[in-house]
Amino acid sequence: MDVLDRRLVAALQVSPRASWGEIARAVGEHERTVARRLQRLLADGDVRVTAIYDDLRSGLGHPVHLHVQVRPGTAGRVAEALAGRADTRSVYAVTGAADIGCELVAPTRQSLHDILTVEIPAIEGVTQTQTQVVLHTFRTVAEWHAPYLTSEEVAALRPPLPVEPLPDCDDLSPLDRDVAALLVEDGRIGFTAIAERLGVSVPTARRRVASLLERRVLLPRAEVEPALLGLEVEAQLWLSVRPHGLDRVGQTLAAHPGVRYCAATSGTRTMIIQVAAAHEAELYRFLTGVVGPLDDVADVDVTLITRAYKRGHLRKSGLRTIVEKS
Image (cartoon, rainbow, N blue to C red; front, side, top):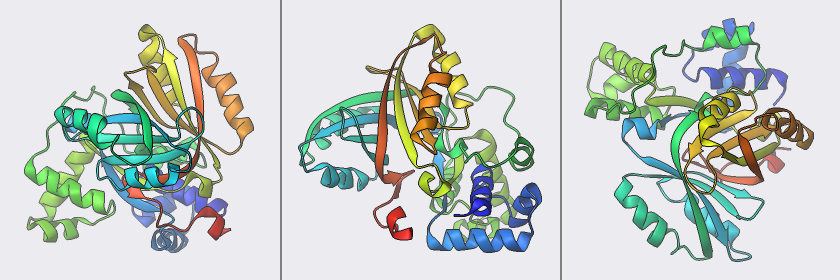
């Protein structure tokens, strides 16, 4: 991707359902140029627009992060097996003590026991797992965008955030679920298409989509490999944070432009963050200049992502690789 491609993808990440005209006005480009470039990237599969649920608030799942250790030579097979599960949202090969990092969304608290004690250990090659249960999410990957836009450009595209705190639970109606499922399948699906698929009026489809997005129980997402955006170093940082500083640290790190994901967890570590950087030196500066000064952070474990098998419920094995593109 050239500089303009990356700026346009960043704009789409800020507002995945924005029209080509809205993006063009925000970034100061011709609408025809915006449409041609983004349609090409979408057609090639370099960018895919989908949506992800706020699992805990919607009551549709319970996310956990797994560290998976495997027998030598089986990492690829285990990662593919995990990526093939409908309940995994992301699967990565990583450096460090674990071989694979996996985010899994259990449909119920009761099912989590069987998944962790029976199903995952039964995968050929798995030798050990460690589980971190998500307690609170400060930033999802759907809320991150590549750092190629000015604050004014972002403000022109991003709808205002709710002023009042969001409720812990926000159940979806049957129609909400049907609309949400279509948005997960295609985050840019039009209101007319939704109305036709579900047998409702266009105004009803429009209201339901607006409600889902305003309540933030569903977050549209423009998915793209960070390396295509020039961010070739991806890291997962596991932090031990003192309880009284957990909220402060989470909000501070979630506001950093390099942080794609940030959540508080149970387990041996109390926070996970995912960082995208252009170079190892940039990651080092993040560790020393951003994480280091936070007094409530007692310890940090840094692992690098070496390959993504799945992101946001989207399998990666069928995509052209970065090497093939170059």
